[in-house]
Amino acid sequence: MKCDVIIVGAGPGGSMAAKTAAEAGLDVVLLEKRQEIGDPVRCAEGVGKRALCQMVKPEPEWIASEVKGARIYSPDGRSIVMSEDKSGSEVGYVLERKVFDRGLAMLAARAGAKVMVKTRALGLLKKEGVPCGITAMRIGEPLRIEAPIIIGADGVESKVGRWAGIDTTLKLKDIESCAQFLVYDPCIDDEYTEFYLGNSIAPSGYAWSFPKGEKLANVGLGIQGSRSRPGEATRLLHEFMKSHFPNGKVVEMVVGGDPCAGIIESATADGVMLVGDAARQTDPLTGGGILNAMEAGIIAGEVAVKAITSGKVSRAGLKEYEDRWRESIGRHLARSLEFKEFFVKLTDKDLNLLFGSLAKEDISKMDLPSMLRVLFKLNPKLLWDLRHLVV
Image 1 (tube, helix red, strand yellow):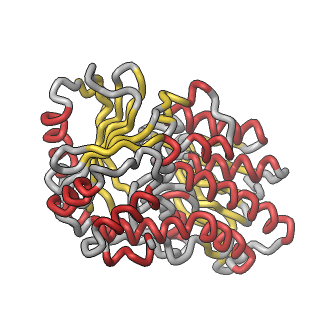
Image 2: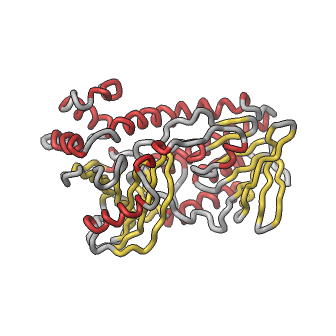
Image 3: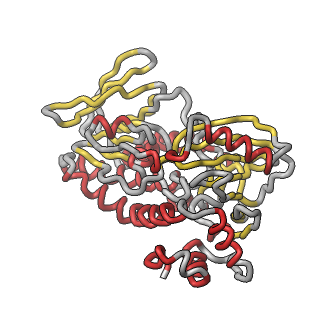
């Protein structure tokens, strides 16, 4: 087979790259190693409404529920409430990721992309050391696909990046070890996402509940990899369930790793661009990455069109992709990484103190930067290392 662009991975980033490039007239092949796009679900499924609607028009079946905002709990049980439009890019809609991912892949197919499921990329084809396609296995049969551009949207364990010589290694402290249950419980609040802080709950991480309607919710937690042992996230999640959802019935379960490393040194090589988790475009503080992956996929698709048109598919020719995603996404990731590296050092006593200082403040309409400025004003000594970010 020959085409203009091969995209490995049919998640949100890969599908948006495929849709964008195909709409511009490129011959696009989108590969997915699994037989079902969107399965298994490895996230809490939350996205901001406004940002999502700027990129696609959501179909009703993509949305499991809409929430009013976020409720954040301190280790001692006190809570603060933030409105949906101030809570960040993971609050607003809770998706049905299996339906959502298939929907985005369908948009790519309608735009003209060839979607191939149960097709596993095995390596890069190279000509004089430059990538020029991939080798793959499709339903047990070997396959060669030639293309001048390969987009790796193959997740945190990205092989495309490694094959292209891009350093995608992660330290244990830069990975969140996560476990999540789909839970039915009559006590679930269908109108608010909930976040639970505390080292006794999730060391250097947090627990969450993302409602999906009709008293169903994604209940999970993530802990810093350097503080985890095999099975630790699942064990802690069972403990969290006992204390917070004692009557909850678990109907699904998923485990996995989430990159929280901040900006990757390079997301490009000759003929190769990485998007989404493969490019470490996940928010280091929250672990959310759906919208970032979609935005990066759109940028990669647009740059692929220019590169194919000009014939400049070298790393230098793909520099526009690096420049654009770092300008639009990278600045936020760098800021989030600084916040993350500060907050993981806080004790539960520190966190309780910060929450307590907000008792007389009206934070319902504050966004995170505004809240941090108030916290800094009330706790300058504790938050002194963050002064350059909040002042």
